[in-house]
Length: 455
Image 1: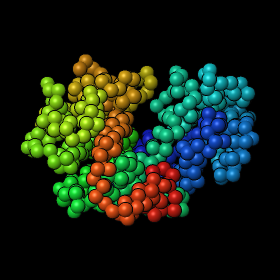
Image 2: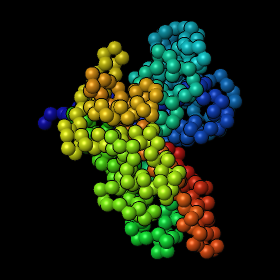
Image 3: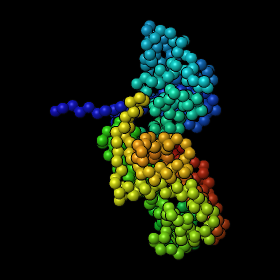
Image 4: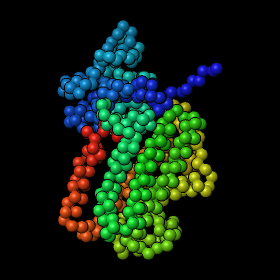
């Protein structure tokens, strides 16, 4: 029998028994003030360092205040150590060779003006041992020529840890308390689509009074699709972050296709909720959020204009319409037209190697209306004439931001106060207590001991 060698170039190719699952190098000095101020994201990274199946190393610092805080929180303090012919980074339980050399001091100069990253830090980060180099987003290092794809800010670092752990079945609120997959995705859905809970509480309280069975069922349908969106997005990112090959490409396309169908389904849910909530008299074909390209309005919006002017103005805004429209050429590609194709892309000069996926030009045209930055920031990594290719993880992260923005804003613009007038004072008090509990923290709302570290 032949031995099968599995390529594990990325942490996302590791399995549960491949400990540590991910190895992060945190640039301590760039987070100096954040550590002292105990900011949320750096505290989460500090807390993650206590998980036995992760290896999170903080670079050496000369700040006694920072050292004291890190020690109090159980972080092992590191130092750069000059050995005979080489330099290492060393803590009580960890040591790794950084480079061959005899003069440690000459590597302590900063590389970029306004950046706290010095030469020895960068040599350490470029060591093959570490998966990612985590630097404060406020550090000028990110604007320099030295930045590579494995260099990330703290928010992205936590998200990468989250994607890896939940796809391996690790749903830890803290190192000593875990929940199951269902609870994780309930939390994730409520965290991203935070205005749903308030709307759902209203619908439940008003059900059978001035909220119909149809509206109740449509809200229930919306919640299921929103949770499935969270699941599908996690899967797209997980497979896209694996080493690029045919298997990971196929799995990414599979979950990306499902995600797109769910998003258009959610837009349909929202359109039907509005139609039924405001009793808009429309045929099935007239219900929808998207305004056709050759029209300035639809019967749906003409009737909504009379019922809720603020919601009408939001949804018909040109930027919001382009955010809605960008999804439909993708759906058409997946359902009716030439199917989405993936390619194995390699940029020899930088070593960038990924699976990329072709998307219709109409998607890019919509994105250009509302995203004025570099298209790469939205995940559009390469263009060949009118052919555009996306990096799925980055693209889906941005797409998810678009969907959460639209859903949260639409739900916030429903004039619930008019509907709630029918409730008694006692019923309103109970409703307010539920909303107050949710606002105190989703973890607490779900009965957990604390808010989760990386969810």
